Image: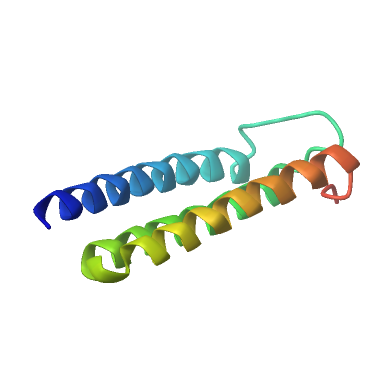
Length: 99
């Protein structure tokens, strides 16, 4: 059981680090420090990164607090992040994500 707990803590820690990197990317996008070509919209990207980062950190905190539910919560949080990134890539690719 202690091995399982250390694995859960390791994965949750990585999710927090991922959320922190998304926070940095969000701040850079929303502050206007990142510019791209059309159809790139930095505000849309920054908001999406913030939401995904919040979900990942929230899931990681839940994993720490409720190890019995860690697998389901971790899969849900990471699944949300993957779908969010794929939606963002598709919106960027098709130009529907620009204002």
